[in-house]
Every structure is written in C-alpha cells, then in structure tokens.
Image (spheres, rainbow, N blue to C red):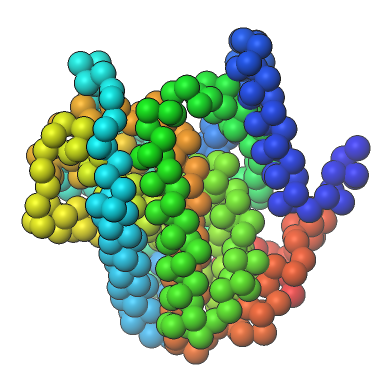
Length: 436
C-alpha cells in the first residue's frame, strides 16, 4: 500500500485528500455525524500542531544560518536591500488590488449581521504592542510561547554577531546547521502527511461552516479569493515577464508544491522547507535562497497583510457605517507594507487586521465578525503569501544575472521522491541540495 502511494505524485495525493475531505465534510454536515466531524477536526488539528511544533527551532536556525551564509555571497548587502525593496513593492501592489477590489465590490454594503454579538478578538495588535513586542523580555519565553517575531529578532541579532565574530563562532554556527538539518528532516516527515492533514482540515471546515455560515459573508469571501487570484495569476506573472523576462508557467510549475501545501496547512513557516526547495529548483542560488526564503516566510505576507486587511477594513467600515477617505486608504497601504511582520508566518491574520483597524480608528469588534470564516479565508491568503515568498528571490536572482535559466526552464517537470529525499547528501551549510 505504501509503495503504491509513493508512485502517486505528491500533488495528486494532496488533491485526493482535498476531494475526500470535502466529501466527508458534507457527509458529516448533512447527516449530523458529530463523531466524523470531531475525527476530521482532530486529524487536521494534529497536522497543524506538528507543523507548529517545528516552527521555533526552524525559524531560529534557518535565519542564523542564512545570515552567516551571506558571508559567501557577493554583494550581500545589495541583495538584501533589493529583496526588501521587492517585498515592499509587491506588498504595495497587493494592497492596491485589495483596496481597488473593496471599492469596486462594496463587500460590507447590505450585509445583515448581529453587531450586538460582535466582540473584539482576544488577540489584537497595536503599533505599541508591535514595536515593543519585537524585543523579548526573556529569550527562553519567546521559544516557549512560540512568538515568531521575537524569535526572528533574536536570530537576526545572533546571526549578525556570529557573522562578525568569524572563525571563533564556527562551532556555534555548525551546531545551528546540524539542528537545521535535523528539523528539516523531521518536518519533511510531517509534510509527507499533508494529504491526510488536508483531508482533516478541509473536511472539518466544510463540516463546521458549510454554506449556512458563509452565506451572509459570501460577497466578502468571494472578494478575498478574487483579490488573491488577481495577485497570484495576474500581478505575479506580469512581474515575472516585465522584471525578470521569465516564463510564468515555469514559475508556477516549480513553485506549485509549496503553494499547494500552503493552501491546506495555512502556515507560511511550516511550508518554508518546501518553498526553499522549490525556489532552489527554480534556479535561485542556494546561498541567496537560504536567506531570502526564511526571511520572507516571516515577513512577506501579500495575502494576510495586504489584500485581506485592506478588504476587511473596508468591509468593517461599511458594516459599521463609517466613511473612509483618501487618508484612510493611504494608512491601510502604510500598515500593510510596514507592519506585515506582525503576522509572523503563522496561521491566521487577526493581529494584522486588528492593527489595521486600530490605526484607522475602526471598531476592533469588527474583526470578530470575520473570525468564523477565517480558516476558509486563510487558505487562499497563505497560498498567496508563499507564492510571493518564492517570487521575489526568483526575480531578484534573474535581475542580478545569477538565476540558472536552464534549471528554471526545467523546474516542476518531475517531483522529488521519498528515496531522493533520504539519499541526498548534506551540504556544509546544512541545506539539502536540490536534485539535478
């Protein structure tokens, strides 16, 4: 049975899990099978829990190793700056799409919801919390609490210090490389469970929400999916052609495993090893990819931090009868570009949404209206996040002339097998090499 499953492409396994999950979800909802719904919830929850378990060590070791790896990259400072500029530019375009779509569709007009029952979510964000929350009061606490933003800060500081210390820091760097390799291997085992996790996550979503709960928010849900689709399949291909002179079809062929896993797992950080492997198979130099992908997985969120908060802010304003002006839309763009690190690569975008709402002076209770359908929205948001995280290093490498065009043109033509994953040798920087 196991050998037969290995012969099925991984993407086809996830698709099969998706179809079965939808069918079981509708079966559980239509026949009120609480035991089936509970089982689906448990299966999906365990998969996400396993992904989250690897997040703290994965983020820390990946960023430390990536910062130290910049030592061997020519013009590292320029590459880092260009990466940040492209992160900001694509986020600005994405938030522009979100605002434009919100103005065009008026997602909150005519929506009838019980505002009396709307309460602010327990987890909220503000500029003060965001800025003070970057620096941990206790480094151990950041790992125990799984505060990814603080872990990123610690990793950047430690990595920069190790880079400057040089040879004396090599034992520490070697330890991080080994830990990164171990975490990536363990996480790969979890990722291979994605078809089962997909079945549970999608099945539970269908069993829990169905169409009854989504119906009042159908216009908003559709707007989020359309906005993400525009960025994914219109904006990104145009940028690939215009800025990188690249074939968009080859990009999606190479990056699709990561985009697909992001859709079902709803975790940019959990998808990071697959994203990095996909980017390297697209021809991006490994040393640069090992910096850009981990950094992007924690700060580059076109879906969660640009499209979604823009549409959600317009939705909340219309539901509560608040008129937004040009200044408000500029503030939405500013928050999206500057505050995207607040999402920190985990499932959900509530912190970013409440940060946007508080900046605009809108009721934080408005975020509570959208909590029920957040898992449905988070699928397409995270897929868009991960696509953007793969897009930027690909474009930067193409513009720098370091992209392996032959590898790019052949990307996605075959899948990585379990045997290849097990047998591939380890590189000195702790990153698994890409198959030829």
